[in-house]
Length: 368
Image (cartoon, rainbow, N blue to C red):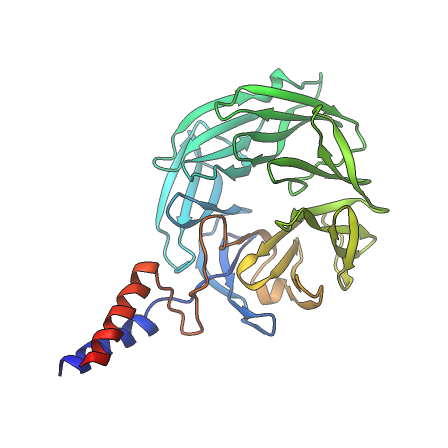
């Protein structure tokens, strides 16, 4: 009898729960959807899990010090500011919590600290540090101190957090400036970039605590004298890129309506992915990695394309009809500090403690 009871517990742990979202996306009407990836040859269909009704929400994933949170932002929800909505990748159908971002209006870029204690958000010309515990503003910095032009508004285009630095691109008109802060948001380095440098929202990244910038002529890295120098030249503008954790990059260039995704290692192009033709009426593009399944996802305003990072093979494309709307945000659930290696086709996602308990139960069952 006891053995049957233990068996029931183990089976319940194996098959309970909700399906894990490996890639999460948001649509223009505030729907939150997911893609479950088991392997490059076994990718599930898009599934809408939650409908918020928010117009063009901001979407991201971050490490909160314990696990992954999916973050959706609604601009100017109240007169006091934006509102943040949190979801768990294990169950996107239920909103875990919501928080008013008092004093923050129109947040458009964010990055998280590696200890999970803070989110650094850009809204207008101001960079904010926000606590992940209560979502209150800890400190802020107005980038009009480092760049401003008569007749133009100063805005933050992108923010990326390193081990001990906060890095941002601020712009005013066609002038852009890279700014590096310490953990207290004290300005340490500023560097003016020429007007032909394209610093889009996905074109700043950090690898081995070195800052890299994607622009119209390739990818540049910040050297020891705090100047950007070329590390990779391209014949077409870099629209989006991300690092590969091995001193290389995945990046997308565009010619007309064709985006070409490539992989570079040691400043040389080692692999060109299969070209994908997409609609080019919208200017933005975002690239993320699902590290768990070696999948690269490229999002435009009309579709999401998936590639196998190892082979460069194009896997498939999801259009607006399949996604349930025009995609405006995409995030990978396998962010720093979390390994989703236990996700399974049954939809159960076990913690380390759960796996230990299962092992102990199995041992007891064998002895009996």
